[in-house]
Length: 76
View 1: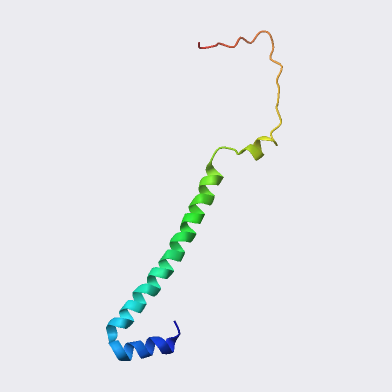
View 2 (view 1 turned 90 degrees about the vertical axis):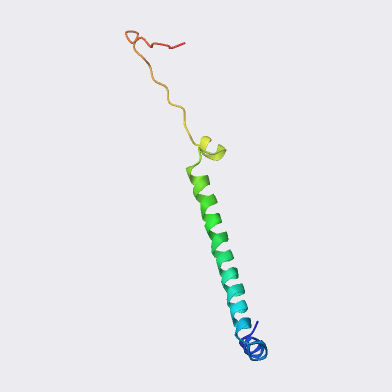
């Protein structure tokens, strides 16, 4: 709404209209902030999650040659 319409409504209905407009405006602002926070949370959750399939493609397998003296204990 434009400011002139708000002033006209305030003159016609009193201060309660201004309070209603303020509450609607603040609710709209808080909804925008909440949406941005949820987007940020999703981004951080994806960043901290285990490696995605795309990242697995870039991992090279590394092999080691173990000497025969070394015995690997298996807990089975």
